[in-house]
Length: 113
Length: 115
Image (cartoon, rainbow over the protein chains, first blue to last red):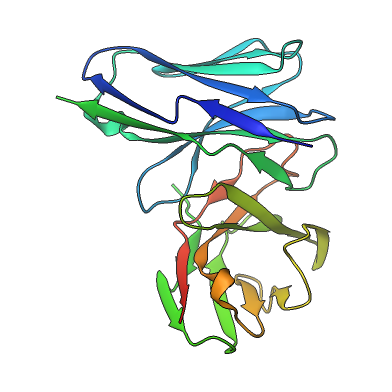
């Protein structure tokens, strides 16, 4: 069964600290993996998209990694800010999909001053 | 920056009633999608739409659901006879090219509450 699992479920860190969020998937076939940021009450916003051949991709203070062999991805946030408080969702797209993305449940990150 | 806009932000409807959720995708986008998120659960794919027809749909998207692009700007999701379990956040999204290699842009959702 196609699944995306994320850990931890929630995380509290102090402003300025780094953190890493994890994603494991069992989606097959695989087309790409995305990380989204979802602020409370808002729609998801795309952070990164990685295809099978990409190992890492950065977007400002966000760096995503992908190991297609072990089917694992991580999202590293550097020098966290209060505005990073949000849910971070890992999403996997199967091959040929027109939109049938498989969403993880997300990691709820709280950045405290 | 262009945005996907959804209306209303919150819809309260009696069980059994029909409801229409509205979306205005980004103007030059060609691919349109609906997703739903039941409170506390994962976002789930409902349907994708391209060239005035459904290109893919999930098991959730049964006969009570329909989508339409009535004019050049709006994209609607209709639920014919709502049930309590239809209560959820419904997100519209659009992309310029197929989602397989393009980011989707999401609206901020419509919270649907069925009483």
